[in-house]
Image (cartoon, rainbow, N blue to C red):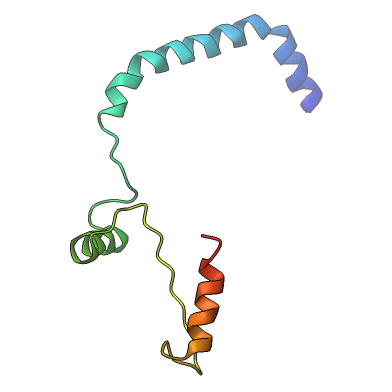
Length: 94
């Protein structure tokens, strides 16, 4: 099967090159129209993730490229110095 595919690629190489060149040129012509329809961010407007991003933007003045880290411990609280120390160790490389 792959032998036959390779054979056809070699046999019709100029037609394949022409077809890909034509596709590339048509894509280059359509590209300016497409970029105006693209929006930054991810997801549709009515998804939960988009709504969460809007809440974060309104309440905490964050952007979509913000980094949010959540730390959790079942046996110590945030007031415990060892908890804070571990968080600072983890965030130090950032």
